[in-house]
Structures are given as structure tokens and as C-alpha cells.
Length: 263
Image 1: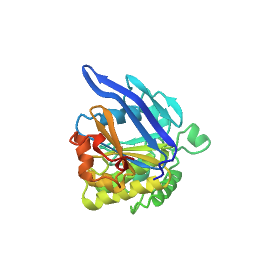
Image 2 (image 1 turned 90 degrees about the horizontal axis):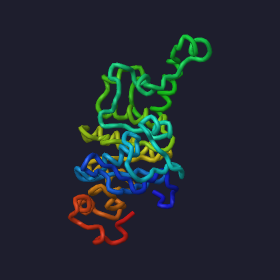
Image 3 (image 1 turned 60 degrees about the vertical axis):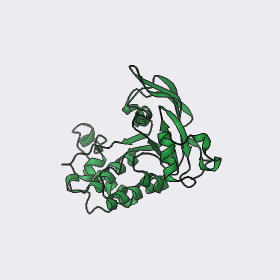
Image 4 (image 1 turned 90 degrees about the vertical axis):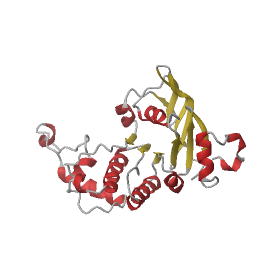
């Protein structure tokens, strides 16, 4: 990962309060082009609130978000999607009874040209099928047919469909919330490999995960959230997993780290 790569998205001094509870206490965030940035943190660290602000699901009380060098103000997830940010939540939000191709274009269906599409509102299923096959081939997802229902797929394959759908429409970045949760070793590895391919195709990826081995396997940098703030940004190649966990829990203050451990 190039530490001199341009910044795709940045957050400065984000504050989010829920009544008397302060979930974000002036946190900062920085995502660079073409990187996988893992976000880790203990329960209550503020990582979920941070991701919700970045994805438009929550409006921060203070601070600002900068996308592509310009301040943005998301009023909801639709605004973030229009700005080129796609989010894959842990529950996936796929339609099990629909085909893979139909799921990839769910909510963004292509219509036929001319009268059939504009007046009769007929879908261009042939075009969607062709683009679905191309998309899955580019990401090297080994699924037999784009016309099979999603409910016939394994958990890892379903996750790949959800990620492929996000990458098809993302312009700047993809946010993945616990993408390998509840998956076996083989399927988890399949999803991690797909995440690498997404990064290698030029998209930046924000990975939220509690699975530290997976974080250290694919992340270029690690954002550590603690007590509503950014505690550190780590280089996983220069720090041990146990030290990263110690920073996350507060057992190891960041001022005790040598500079080479930081990204």
C-alpha cells in the first residue's frame, strides 16, 4: 500500500451523541486510494457510529466529512450511495428467492430501450444477465449460473454476491461490515480473496471486523477506535496482533509504541 496515495475520504472531529451517551468524541478518520483499511475496536469504542456517519445512516452532531477533497453532508444512506459509497451490512439484505443477476441489480434494474422500457417499464433481463456474468467473472467468483436463486448458495457465496453488487455501483469506496462473520474457514477465505480483488481493481475498502487474523491477513492499515476517538492507525506488518489488541483495549498506550509500528 502506498502511504503517499491520495486521500479518498476523511473525517475530522466527528461527534455523535445519543442523549447523555457520547458515541463519538471528536474522532478522525482517513482512507487512502486503493487500500483496505480495517476498523477495529472494543464494544462501545464508537466504530459502529463512525461507520454509520460515513455511510449516511447517521448524521453527526459536529465535525465534517470530506469525500474526494470536498465536504459532503449526507442526510441518509441514499445520499452516500449517490456520492459513490456502497455499504454491505452484516445481514446482507439479499433477496433469497431471486436469482443472482436479479440481486446484483436489486433496486437498480435496467429497463429496455424505447417504448418497452419507458412506457411498459419492461426490464432488460438479457442485459442484466450479461453484465452480472461479466461482473462475477472479473471478481473470479466461482458460481455455476447467474440464474440460480440466491437461496441455493452457500453463506460465503451469498456474501460474494452482496460484495459484487456493492462494487458494481461504488465509485469511491465500499464499506464491509463483518463480511466473514459466521463463515467457515474455507468460505471466509473465499470472501477475503474477493476483498483483495476489489482493492486490486482500484476501489478503497473499509473493513469492520472482530476477526483479528482476518484483519491482519488482508488489511493495509488498521484504524483503532477507542472511547469514541481514533486511538491509533497501525501498520499490520510492523506490529503484532497481541499489541494491536492491547492498544484496542487500552492495555498498551500508543505513546509506548515505537514509531515504526504506526502507519
